Length: 392
Ligand SMILES: *[C@@H]1O[C@H](CO)[C@@H](O)[C@H](O)[C@H]1NC(C)=O
Ligand SMILES: *[C@@H]1O[C@H](CO)[C@@H](O)[C@H](O)[C@H]1NC(C)=O
Image 1: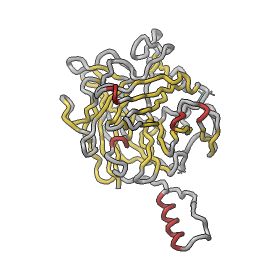
Image 2: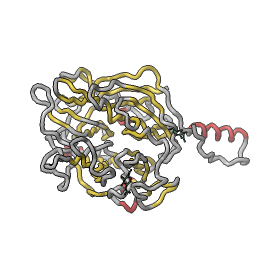
Image 3: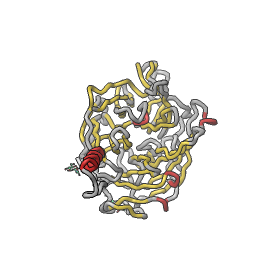
Image 4: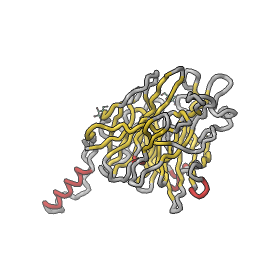
């Protein structure tokens, strides 16, 4: 637990006011939430035509918008086939009461139906120097440019006409056939996602523009891929370097493409130039458990929240930590739920929280997903179980 600096002035208030002040301080303490009852496994988030890895979601108007990594069509026997495309996107719907619309999906039982026209093309374009003559980014020397989103798009504006602007930062991972990396701290590409409901149609997807290929150079700290949250007109974006440090930058929501508008948190203050990938004083203690996850703001708790996986874990063990501000102090990440692992060698990863699936910001609950990785009948299947956790 942390006490946030009192804003009430000592010696200038009545006992009554001092008590109110003390209570308000208590309310903004970081704390570790407790699960109420048994989390419910609701089914799979599934497009019955696509096998897809590592999905995350954002709220786009009246629907949830999902982005995933490697995606493949199923053949007529339901077996994943070629081509592999390095990212895909899709929609899911809500019931009129605001809950996710669970329905029967042929072959998958009850689940949340994903749909959208991907046309077997990467949602986030693979660029000219990333072996983009194929949809996977595969190079003739056996290496691969794996242009994989680690986080869903960060929505920075929503027009009254339903148009949406969102951003995604993606590391230019250049991997070897054994999942080794050619550059442990690669440059980061900034993509803009635009959604115009008047032209997209119900199955149409947002369009993606490459804002800048090397938005962050490999010598810069890679802000963005590790997740972000919008609060008080700022996009707060996190990054993680190869050494495992997690650091934070902020930028006004209308200036995400303007590098001069960024401020970088280091040694407990903000500076105006990127401190560099290995600068000391950038790591924010306990901001995450070290693995992949999701940042969001809980208005029920008036706290920033991170939910995700521990570093080096390949199990569906969910951790949570909270803080009164994006910069901290963050409480110690605590394990709160374990889901079923897949049977393949990387059994469970890409653990995500989905505040965008809640019916309102006052619902004291969270939806979780992860990639369950199974190998059956000589094929590798990714599924995305959906879990509902109620908090005390
Ligand atoms: C940063 O540190 C990593 C080791 O974690 C190292 O591989 C890399 O070369 C360093 N980068 C720079 C620019 O110093
Ligand atoms: C952060 O977590 C570590 C354990 O990983 C713990 O020892 C430490 O007290 C935590 N720091 C804070 C500020 O809570």
